Image (cartoon, rainbow, N blue to C red; front, side, top):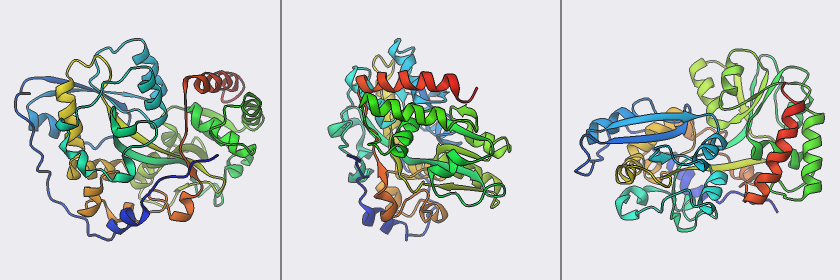
Length: 358
């Protein structure tokens, strides 16, 4: 059965009415970290331009900041042993796998007082009861970004698969096979081998217009005019729209439904500086810092304090593509994953990649 999103819509939307504030963060770094180093491993284009520099200045530390195109890549790397990362940013699906495999350190909530700023909606989710290993960072949806100058209004996944021009898919196994399961009339979290076979065949049969399967750069192909449509995470398309300052690009949550996801901050097993990692997580949960990140990335913030203070740009806060309406929320689902389903999806995806996007 499809799991709808657990939003507290009134609490979130009510905060949008506030006027955007501009006060600076009052976060104070705990003592004792001067001269130390923190290593952060995050998705690309997923943090504000001054977030890291401001943390370095506040704590008198050095941050080594590295990025990955998908968190599948991050997971593969950490399964081989942590090469020295202190903070990682897994999706809910990957976080559930990392917790099950013992790849994350348990958090000390006493070192993260700003956890109190997070909306209850985003706490104690099924993949991490009690937030023992993760705290919410950003949230969003997976949908279709398109060039409105080349394509008529897009409303559904069918528009993507039936389009005659070039498109790009997202290199996210769970997302793409979830879409295919929806299109073949099945639960997007199905583990049934026959249903997954049907979903695999659907993508192979309907991938003739795919020119590229993108890691975390499909939005760049759209901006360069290399594709007419792209499956992408919501904020990536809104970043392109913001940079363009035009009406050329649009983002849609397809009528058939799509995945709602929450990305989290976590400390990987064997982190060299877990203490400083806790300080960084607390810093990101400061309402001003969290708002700066969401205003830059154009993803939803789980930081209720940032919303209550009116720190989210009004244009973003009022956009239903970023903060979906209650009606749209009924079409959204959380992805559910375990090692057995992961193996089935990866096997199907490997075959799909042979025939699609080459």
